[in-house]
Image 1 (cartoon, rainbow, N blue to C red):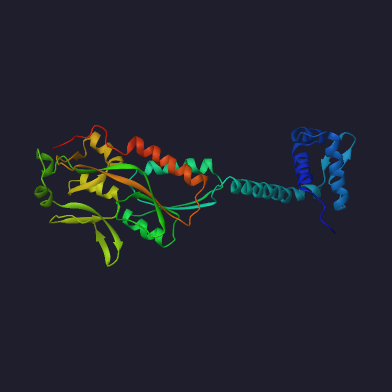
Image 2: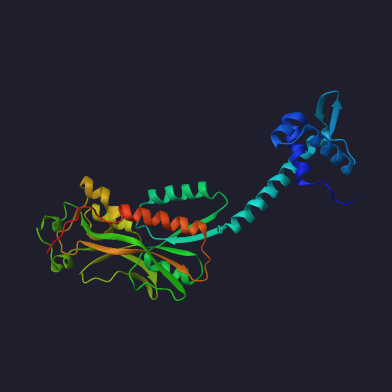
Length: 306
């Protein structure tokens, strides 16, 4: 038997069953009662079954019609999903976005951003991975992600990728107010060398690596939040992004070292493969990041030292 039923007829069947009358269904669909009635009668003729019992002006779905409702709803939903997917394709909207990022920006910001993305782009499949900035380039080079986001110096580069600077983040030399370095009116490089430096570590060639600095003792951890927390606990001094350190500087759990390079602006970068076809969602995401960095990336009122 050839398949002659249409999606329009399925919508009319669903509306009539849900609303209890052809007249109500017609109003909801913006059609005349006669047009919907004729279309449903044609559907019954095409399928060779009775879908409605008509008793005068009253209409009731048959048991068969009720059995078909779930399948009809699935067909309707699928048709709408296909139409929406085609529309998103024409609008340049990505179906999947895989992102690796560091934790230079607060986790609360990322949670709010993901919630907003999910509400704005409900069909998006989104993957977020967290890793130190030095590992982002490797992740991107391996094709595991579409975007790498984080605080990166110019040495971090991936062949075949595009580097897009979204804004600056102040990296701050911070320490607990109870730490010996906090009592010095001027901190020198020699002073720094004599105290433990809480450095970021990552996996690279040859195993676990750490940020290079001329100090006697380094304590390597994977993420900026751990570095900040350990500095707050008085374990050593650290270079921490301003968005993560700001609250603790304000409430006194951290203090900025009296060092000429206590505030070091560094680029917050998006690395993306040239093969990646970014679209509406990627552009939306990058604009949100630019806005956040413009408002919160730099340390307001930062001291300047000679």
